[in-house]
Image 1: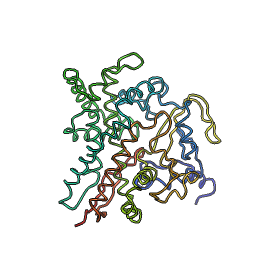
Image 2: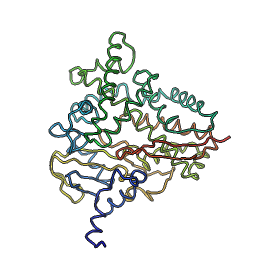
Image 3: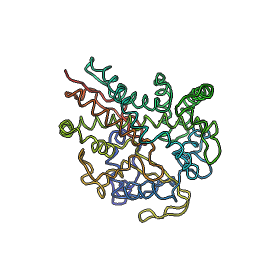
Image 4: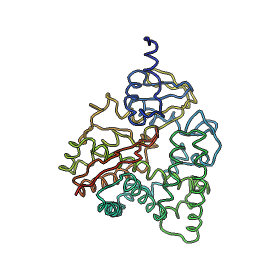
Length: 408
């Protein structure tokens, strides 16, 4: 038998991020926490935020930083496992603060910008049609393996100047890295060691070959970069390539898979999009809001800061639950409803502030091209058994499988 005190505790405790119920549908837990304890201190001293205003405040305020105190694992406050992957991610742009972050991002923006992304449009269209050609005859598609994964990894490889033919290797390496980044636990970091070691050796060979035979591509240019008057270290060069190759397909993979799943689950929205293809831009934003590809973004406090009505001390790990913030009813009207024509949609799917995803425009572009092509080419698209299955991640909202039939 439970009483008021027990009921209150249940309402204000963190969800079980590993449970089947949470993996399949985290939003009931997010809603409960947002309603009863939106600025939540965990038993181990981390803080979890579920309101849009609080998350946006943390992501934009420079008193919250990415670089962790004492050089511990930037993924979580309660681990500090020394490992190759941990060393690599310390060099990632997303885990660095100004002035280094500002300088490196500024240099990267010469190559990774709206114009360079838009220039990839013809290739994205060609790759999309080639992948769809490959499944058309079978009248069946496993969306993730046949389309949502291969397309963005091929695009980012071409954009960087890496061999597209090795995309199967990128997939093998990406899975354990994603798992490690998802939880940040020592056992996951250790399990990713073989993958990151192989990936670094592979990239080091390509960088060395580009030094001997330069090309007009990102991989050739990166080792020559001057950041604040100093050349990038070899470790920083390789770590940057790892981060771009991994991040350059992970978010888009999630967007494509979730976007198609949402349309299959909401046939009236799918039909509306077929009738009005121009709605694809707002539809993509709604898919990003409704099933945010990245569900968590973290920061560290540099001083005691008030969030909501609570004082969060200096040196604390603060986790913005984007999946919760993007369904905040104070910001989004009827947030549990899918509306591909939603106009007021300031979602946080790509973050906010100086760390806003550098590839956000590319992800949106790929999403629009791919989903439009699927809807146009397969008007009888329908779900097929065994349906959709989510990967067992809590930081990323990512389908493992999505089976569909393509019609006659």
